[in-house]
Length: 397
Image (cartoon, one colour):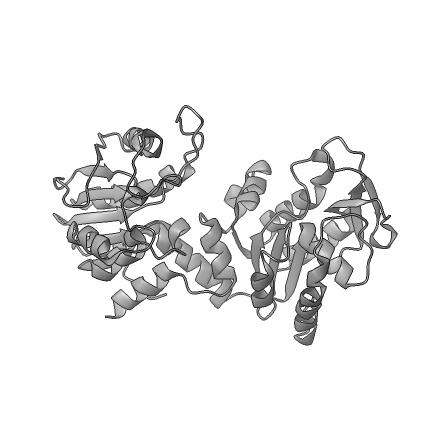
């Protein structure tokens, strides 16, 4: 992707004294009392903010938080806890500004946090008047929120249309580089892991990857549907029988390219879906009518691990079993460690995937961990994200 990079503007001395508007992703989880329970996204935003401050800019930062009603502000929608955490991380005051659309006062070398942008009327529908007002606040717009890159909203897309300069922040740029490396110019063989409960939610991803990858590993309920398509019995396991023809199409598309969708040869079953349910390892051909398949078996896990260790590029989205239950986590654990031990460039994304990475402590051994769930999935589908499209257009204008 050919976009202006904020880091380049800073290096070239084009940011000093300028008003910089950063769209960050500070949408962090909170408990009932409003305390932040996990601050990864806030910490991820710090490099861009520091970059702007170090360059001598007057810095404005905004983000959405939760799902507020446009035009109606409530205390639960406030970025106040985020402002407090930003102040701690930056070691300086971070004033929170309300009703900011018509004007913001901030001096060069200072930073302010602009209250929840999704409270503004017209934000989600990318209202042109709102976008132009936001653009008028700044000399440089910086998109650094990959988690929103698949949405064309006023603070993510409209402002990029009308700002004097629109560029990619370091977090967004890192996502662009990782995606290009993994999907546009992959080192072969390329292996993708797509797992989850339903084929229907990831069917377009599977079809898109079937034209690109050398091995397409499916897991979870998706694998059950593919097992059915391969003529195997799955008992009372979660599956989508009405999508068997789609699963067969993916298998055939891969086969036509000399590639494959590995079908499990053994599985781990239980009679009930529960953490304390007795687990039984059995051949994939021996699944009983009252069995639930909750993980791939050790033989399958070992075969897949060998493929992953020999891969050149790995794309990972989703655990291959119910890894939250100790008796059914072996498949995901083996896969995770195989990816960590592989010399391949690996890119991983999606909430459950990130939870698995954290559980097995392999964060530093993954090539790139994507911060955007929905955006990451849309990239895998082969879609051009609105943020990438507008930033590229502005760079080439």
